Image 1 (cartoon, helix red, strand yellow):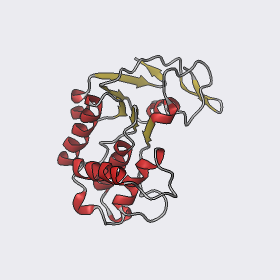
Image 2 (cartoon, rainbow, N blue to C red):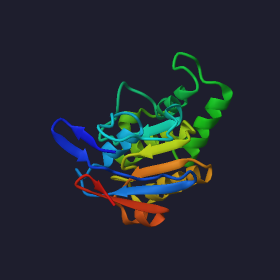
Image 3 (cartoon, rainbow, N blue to C red):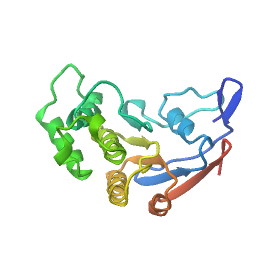
Length: 199
């Protein structure tokens, strides 16, 4: 696929296949097109030329990179609970099984003790784990995460990478952007973007 933003070509004839049950890391310098690739596969951005095939858009979890706490004031539990909105409308209360999924993801990312804290009060690494937990709570067929290990400490890095690996073991397609050597080593496959060209 080719993706343009205005007059600028951000992705040039990018071609890749992502297999269920595997973790793929997209590496590259800042501005190389990693976020654009994930957003296009997620259906957030349109393809200029070519196509994205085989992605069940109703079962895609896309976790964008976040520098600050997003949206209105939320507790960590409420934010992770938003991941269940794909199966439960936001105006309905979460069912017991949905609350169990949220609890599982809070535990998986070691956020249980922070569940009732406002998301905005968390450190950058804690907030990153909460956003990953929100994506995991969707239990989607495809999980796309932009820089989930950015700015996290070594312990958080391990928790996030283990959670992504577990999600692949569940059978999901897992694709995330990363710079960390540990993330690259933990992946089943590494694709590199250089000025919009994928290799």
